[in-house]
Length: 186
View 1 (cartoon, one colour):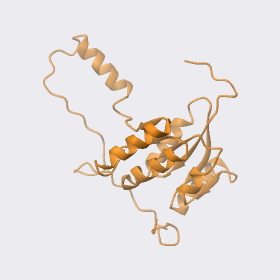
View 2 (view 1 turned 180 degrees about the vertical axis):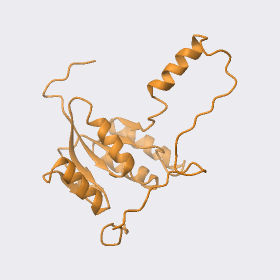
View 3 (view 1 turned 135 degrees about the horizontal axis):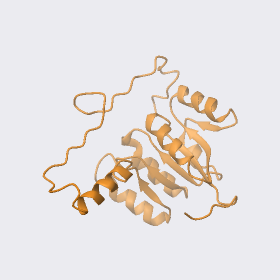
């Protein structure tokens, strides 16, 4: 509810511009004062898509460390494969960036301690993605339950429309995916 002035700008970079990176960026850009400063992805098709959507002058790279070196970036969205979350988050905090990292925060639980230490040391904001648990729908359900509107709670069953019977996200591989269009070594 705070008034936003023209000096109140947060310039963000996106590391991992796949499905969730698209969603997170779209949401971030709806916030007054947020501007896109750059995108990093290992797949050429996503970089081309970003330039089509945001203009050819948009800074893009395949190397997330190059994006972190930019002084015109205040914060980053990390939406890569989860095995990279810990390393990129620590590097971003060390580079003086605020971080929004997708869940899970780390790939292995023992990596969490180093991320928490890096966050405290940096003095920057670290937020872990939790889109649905902070949604208005859950807040309303809690309110209705507390008011006795729902009645006695016996069970909660939540279902999301995922693409397989086991609930895993399944994304199609782009038709042009190859060693030439994707930096497999990274």
